Structure formats: structure tokens, C-alpha cells
Length: 456
Ligand code: ATP
Image (cartoon, rainbow, N blue to C red; front, side, top):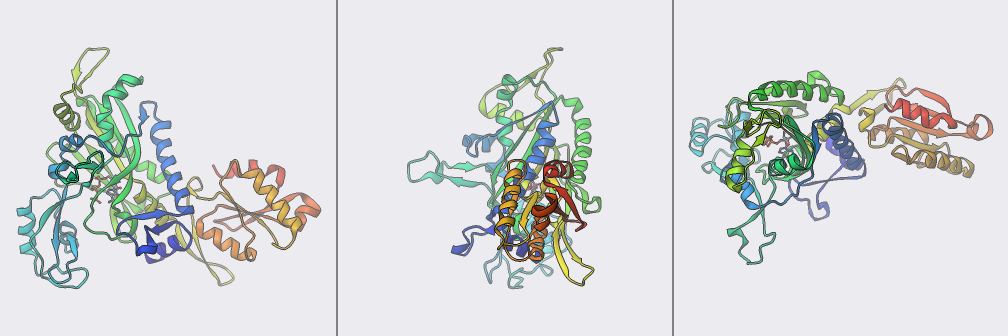
């Protein structure tokens, strides 16, 4: 994990937020390569969901919604994690995670009484992660919704707060009717959206795995009640395959079935990834019955039922959701790609073996030597001819070996070098493959086609 964090900082993938002020816990910024990677991750998800499924449409709802949305969804009363505080160093810990680490099953759905009972039974095993003390306060449920004063000018907004959304899917439920009435979809159909979510997470550990401001990619499919389980099983297969297509090795993926279901859910499985700190949730797949639309129907007073145009049958659709974090996918993809290799000459290299579609930079263009204007000019020409089709980078810093190492470390699939032969002889360039390190001579006229074909 340390190696990945250091690479992320050194090569401009991820920076701690407001770092010059000492950082801001559990908030991070994506640097120039990080933003390319996360954009490619989001594009791959969008393609797999919206572009390749005729019955799934996109949405981009606002971060802020009517506060009643969060009452209807149950977040105001029940979106909380159990917290304990170390009496010695005042570190705050999430009790269900602390218990899990000593082999005791607990989760955030348990009541304060249940959690405190478990805490008592295991108090000898549990110690503070910071100071090792065993003296804690009682567990208390802490609500994770982040509040704001948006649209409230009274100076005492905490009485009637608005919320930064705790999950993106509520924007999908409240737009169910709008989408239905404005597009040609019919049940079964899905709505997909990517967007920021905010949670006052108690523990700010594990890098971008658990952020307080993060991005979710969520798809909710609305189905006829009796067909939901079949849809659910189908989507479990689709989502598993999606990760394999993203270049994740199957041995690094695992299913985890929820033992303790919320009262309205009929099935809940997570896809876990083998992060550097062990298998942890990457995506959640849930069958949520008609709970969400029923709740919003009740709280808004609007009829959110669906009438089948053929049979005239009327019902509240059931929901199957596939929900994943863009940041957790980023960390999984990065972990999977991170490779240390010993080369034949005894040297070592770090290479990020991203699937090509996710690589931040697709091709790096070099003049062999920086101080030969004719080489620099030709390399610039090559760069200019490619940049509108591929995310490219021009680099003339340091020697070629150093430039290769740098591109390996940011996962660039191809390095293209302009040398004397290019100008004097063959109008071709050397193309070096990131993974095999093999070099090929490719005519400049054919370079665009070569990259198009090989980057697929
Ligand atoms: P966890 O149990 O790890 O807190 P969760 O079950 O609360 O996660 P969901 O509410 O199901 O998560 O959210 C769906 C997805 O959003 C998760 O699978 C995860 O990929 C992502 N996600 C949730 N919380 C965070 C966070 N704090 N930081 C980054 N990604 C998150």
C-alpha cells in the first residue's frame, strides 16, 4: 500500500486535499494522470451500462435535493455507523470494523445495545489503533449525512439542514416518473448515474478506499415484482464479467453475501476485491424490493406506480441495484496494474500494466535527443498528428531510458521515438511496447492506424 500511495503522489495520480495546509482527512484530489484514469474508469462503466444496454438510460441529478428525500429514504433516522472514542488519545473508531478485526461479526445495522453487548464481551481483545489503550467510551450511533445551509439564511440552519447526498441513487428514485414520462423506456428498464456522494465516515484510513467525498457509479433497474430475482441473478453475472473485462484477475475477486439484511431487502451480495489490506467491498448488488419507490410515493404524496401498457396491470416496480465507487475501482485497477519487474540486465522497473483502454496516456512521443532541433521538430509533428485521436504526451526530458521508466510508471502502453533514421532514411519511428518492451519500426504514415488497432 505504501508503494502505491507513494507512486500516486510522485507521478501525479492522487494528492491529499489541501496538502499545503496539512491535508484534510479522507478527502483527496486527482492529479493530471489520476483524472485521466478516473475519467476512463467512468467512461468504461458508462459504456457498459448505458451505451451497451438499450433499456438503460443515463441521468445526472443534483447533489442537493429536497431534505424530505433523506427522511423518506431513512437516512436522517438510520444512516449511521457505531462509534467509540478512545478515552486516552481520543481517537474515534468504527466499532463494527474494530470487532471485525478481532474476528467478531458486527455491522452498522445492529442497534447500540447489540453493539455495546459485543463490545463488553470482547473488551479484552480490543485496543486503540493509535495508542493501544483498552479504555473506550460506550458505542454511539453517529449519523453519516453531511449537512449544509444551502438556501437557509436564518443563521440557525442546523434545525432545518439540507444535506449533501449520501448516495446517488436517491436522485434516480425521485426521477423515476420523469424518466418514464420523457423517454421511451418500459419496465424493465434501468437508470444509471455517476456522481459525487458525501459521508461523514468515522475512520479516515485506507487512502482513497474510504473517502468523505467520493464518487459513485450506480445503476437501478426497475422490474416487475415477480421477475426481480431473475434480473438480480443475471446482473450478478454481468457485473462479475465486467471486472474480468477490466483486467482484474478472477482470483482477486470474491463474492460476499450479507448475513444481516435490512428489512426491505431480499438479497445483497458484494463483489470484494483483494486490496493491499485484504478483500473488501468494491461493489454492492442489492435487491431492494419496492421499498424506495413506495417510500418516496408516501412522503411526496405522488403516485409512483407503473401501468403496464399492454396488460394495464398497475404495480410499484421492484429495484435491483448495482452500486460501485469510482475511487474504489481506481484503487483496485491501480493495485492490479502495479508490477515490479527484474530485467535481464539486473535493473528493476515499476510498471503499471493497465488495460489499454484505461491507461491515462496512450502514447508518449520522444525525440531521441533534446538538443537536435530537427529531431524535436519531427517529434512535435508526430505528436501534433496524433493528439486529436489519442491522449498523448510529448517528452524530451532526460535520456531515453529515463523517459521509458517514467512512462512505465504511469502505464503508457506505447512510447514512440523519432531518431536520425526517421529523418534521414525511412520516415518511420520506433514504437516500444510497455509490457513486452519489444521495439518495432512503424512508418509515420501508418502510426495512427497502428495505434488504433493495438489500443483496442
Ligand atoms: P462500506 O461498507 O465499505 O462502508 P457501503 O456498504 O456503505 O460500504 P454502499 O452504501 O453500498 O457502501 O455504496 C456503494 C459503493 O460506493 C460501495 O460499494 C463503494 O464502492 C462505494 N463507497 C461507499 N462508501 C465509500 C467511501 N466512503 N469512499 C469511497 N467509496 C465508497
